[in-house]
Image 1 (spheres, rainbow, N blue to C red):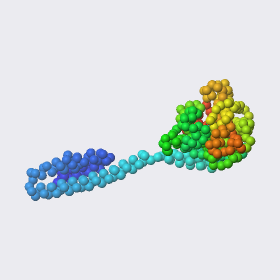
Image 2 (image 1 turned 90 degrees about the horizontal axis):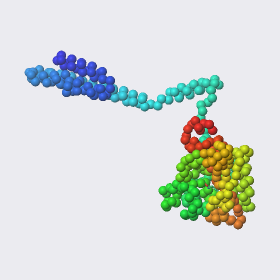
Image 3 (image 1 turned 45 degrees about the horizontal axis):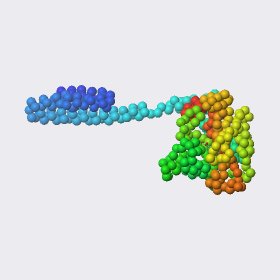
Image 4 (image 1 turned 135 degrees about the vertical axis):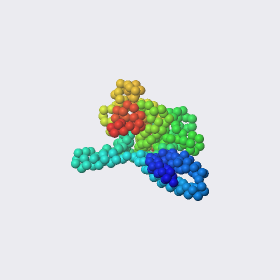
Length: 357
Ligand code: DAH
């Protein structure tokens, strides 16, 4: 009987001392399982009288039950402890932020600090809004259209029937929807011209800023996801001189008087005549560099007089109306304004870059 109570005491010390669930479980055989003093004592019962055996047998059972109960309590305790530790270690420590905020609050109240810096509009968004303001002040309205387009609006109505070679200028992302090749991510903002002319009668004076997509490998002057601002004027008596005058006024409003711009004869299926619109390179000032591919000029986009074939597709009377249109890259204009040498900086999401603007 003494040996049993000593064994129980020893086992209790073991179980109480276990520091973790796994340590506790590892102790089970030694405390009251196969390798325990209790198990050994059970083996000695055989040599005793039936009465002694019964008495000691019951005492052993009670001892084991007591230890099992203790084991259960310790297990629950340790499991609870470990869950708490886990939660603690996975907790996000926001105390530093709270501390900084409190300090800032105090300093603010004493007039010693600026408010915490907040985010702001992305450079491209700022430029887009500025462009909208410039054209609104010139009498244009701002319109928008969908980024997922169909083949008719993006190509066919713009005088590019299926397999037209000019489609090669627009490396297109096609979408799985609709018939094969019919749904796509718009490659330019020009499909919105089509939507405007289909849905209303001239006069139309509108600009359309928006996101466009092309399967271009990103480089210093190309992004596969980029922004354009389309312009469309349709009215009676509109000539190429109105286009040139509008662009002059725009260049002066956006860049100031310092920058030179030029129109260069070009081709687009949806304009006739067509021109490309260049400004002097903002990185080298015209000397030739990586940004302008050595030419000294950077193309901002295309423009021209709306082709009568487009008027025919959208149902505008080409005998009565003429018009001009343009599509310029907003990202490039943002780069031109800020002296940015590589468009990829615009999408890297580096806060050190973004906070400068
Ligand atoms: N959509 C053309 C492009 O992305 C640019 C363009 C050229 C737009 C002439 C026009 C235009 O509206 O008249 O390359």
